[in-house]
Length: 128
Image (cartoon, rainbow, N blue to C red; front, side, top):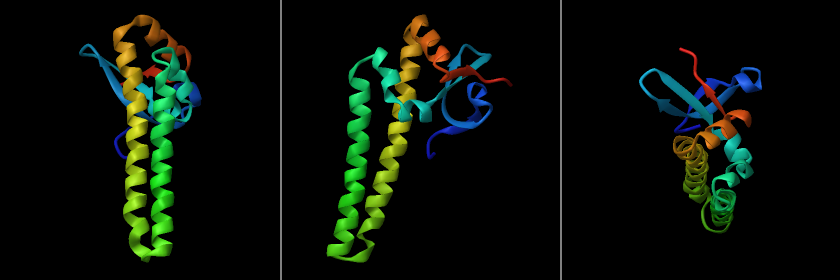
């Protein structure tokens, strides 16, 4: 959404996916589908079993901030949901990007991780 670029995903019939770019060398650029990893953080557990918990806790925190801001807008003044909504959207966008960067770091470290992400359909070569 906010930090990510959208490119077609060949593993998902060309639908647009929000991705983190992973440059390998001068001429090859790969895309890592951060949105799919954020939706299914269990895919990241192979790299570190705390990844899924970390992403879920951060998303839960974002939703709690949103809920508390709505409650505060009802109890105190109407406009208090606006900063809570903005903070919530920003946190969720950051969590998406974090999921992509976790996968990118793992793909840079080992070829097994690179192949795992490719076979899971969340990493592909961008055709130029």
